[in-house]
Image (cartoon, rainbow, N blue to C red; front, side, top):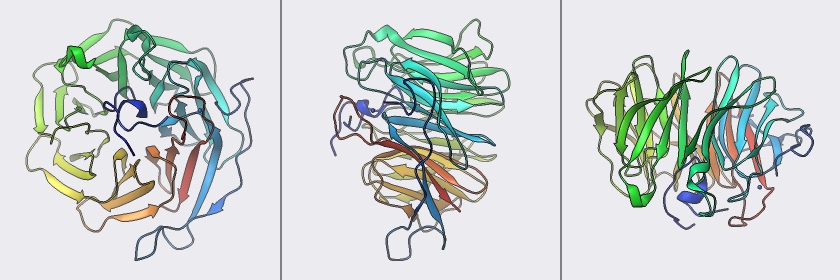
Length: 360
């Protein structure tokens, strides 16, 4: 596995050098899910719960990256070929079935988030280096389908994205030649004036919000926060440097994040002692999710999906043998992730997939 430049814009190109056609994208329709496959982890005490099943919910995907779930569907973004507008935003029922295309014609679609009404996503111009730097965007589309709405355009590399009851938030990474010039931006869900809540940041990437603050990681693995309305930026934990700081998740008391190695860490929301939950379990940690018992993450480099208790302990490999797993999400019963796939560096791909493990 090789490093490229960094991991910006919600796409793999800018960190781990890898290189898809959206399922049903040609006519806005879909395709039935492949049949389920019985899954197991590696020997030696690791692996999913006895009787757990791995289901491929969607195959033939074009570099899927971000993933999100609600009570009925899994949603994801297909990044598409580098510098091409063949990316798409998709959904499929939690139990499998026909995958539906919600938006087409996307350039570098990356991270996604959902609320009760819409899917929101970031699109990055920073993929193959040929698309104009002003083509990055943030957009939304109703959960049931309809006309996409562009909330923001003209950026270099919008990356992490989050939503609350009134606003959408995202990070804008900066070109290396302009670093540190990244920003954290907010806009009303219905559109309107932009608010820059943090500026002069060093490659901000993964993002999460709670009721008071926005939290993000940067390209050096540093963890930062700022009030939702803007103000002084607080460093919660300093990073080790290098292309890192990719995954982030919150619960009621802590922020959790990944740095390449991988290392999984946590710190109280208000700051304090940094705790290392896992160190060196896997290769190139990417996405992260959390529930009331465990932290879950994907290892892009070695094709594993893992978990560890919130308080620390033994890291468990839930599944192995995946093809470059990236985004991850959980609900009450299952873990979902996107396999980026793609051995074709930059060109057309169709070997990405959306996966589900039950029970988690």
